[in-house]
Image 1 (cartoon, one colour):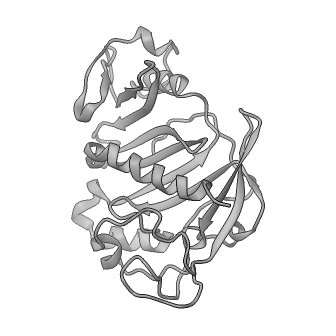
Image 2: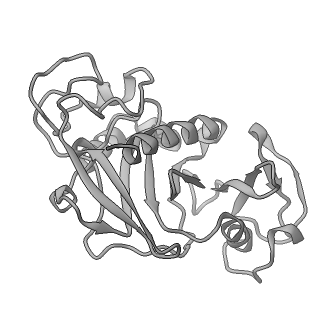
Length: 263
């Protein structure tokens, strides 16, 4: 994830996701199970080679679920969420009914399978020659500042340090790759590129910053910010996945719609 800092409260308990080990899952790799389960026993081969799957594959059925709330303090409201326990690695995250200011999910970008810390390490060991294009990403939901302000902050950090913060409209732009608009960098040192996508009203609906490969950032990553299901979203992925930003966003929107639209 990028080292940029944006205003977001972090819950007092460490909020990390995904699951530990031991049991077979019903939907993801075609292995039915009749018992409610939440443990993540995917092998590295399964994580990396399972075909694209529905991001909501673990919702419903006999899968164990956890219900809690995201605190949107900037908007003075609570957003109820109900997610499969397999995406929640730490035991404190299994507590029902708590209020959280943020939640992290580790996922495989290509199939939305959950990834644990140990699996992340195993993926590193299994792909020593593919470090620049890891298939996993980090999804954080919480309460952030508005996207227009986020773009302004991203631009102010393009040179690697905080420059004068100005409205995004004051910076020149050019048509960018993959349907995005690219901010033209200011003169001087450049450590990251900034892209955005606007809606019909001219306001940004997606903001992306990507580090540039250099001696410090050998395996550059991107951060993508957007709004979905009444929460603010930050998705981190390796730069080679930038061409797939729209598909990644669509999968996250699908996942969050299942997490927030329940009775």
